[in-house]
Image 1 (cartoon, rainbow, N blue to C red):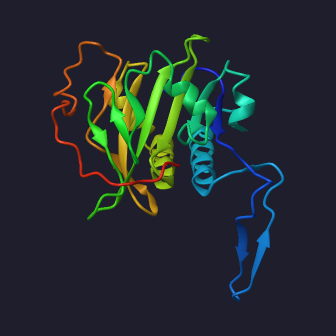
Image 2 (image 1 turned 60 degrees about the vertical axis):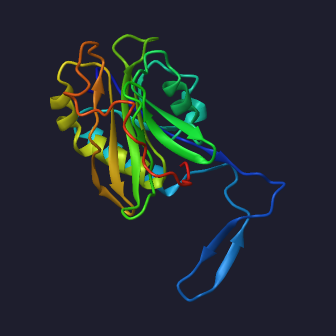
Image 3 (image 1 turned 90 degrees about the vertical axis):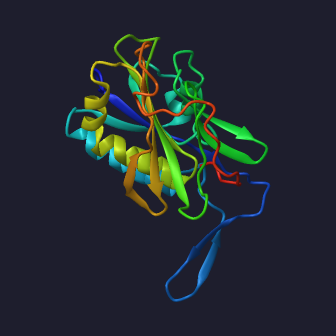
Length: 238
């Protein structure tokens, strides 16, 4: 599943706008609070920290060297396999991977204020945060790094924070299931459904497409583009 060589876990970054008022505050258990100017450089979200921890622990069991880098630094070094965490809104490495020509599987899409994950083969849309269940969704994507044969690009990214960290947990802990499902396929994309607040609730959301061109989409659990979309609503992109 992982390919040869080392793996780099790549998290996103958000820069501080020093011209804007500070939005950072530390609240203590005794009720006091301190407003902060924020970090000196970049901000890393809770979901990215959880995701990085899951992936480093999981991958360290199977290979010697797993490193963690910020997206801006990794863009200049594409010779290793990379797991990009978070959507392209916060991670430029994710944006690069999703735009690769051999990503024939999954993408983030937007209609007005509605964001969703779209299966590029079937047209099925995964819309999160809809009552009554209020689920988040995350994608797990694996494609070849065509610049360096034998290396791969992975993406774990959600519509919201829990979709991102739930997808990362699933890849780190259930990668054997994915390997069994796709066997000798070098590329695939799946979507996981995640309960808000519980990464370990992540489970496959009924889709799964691989690089085998003659795969029957009905056999793999996909819905065709005539499937009625879920009710619309506004969600937040991680």
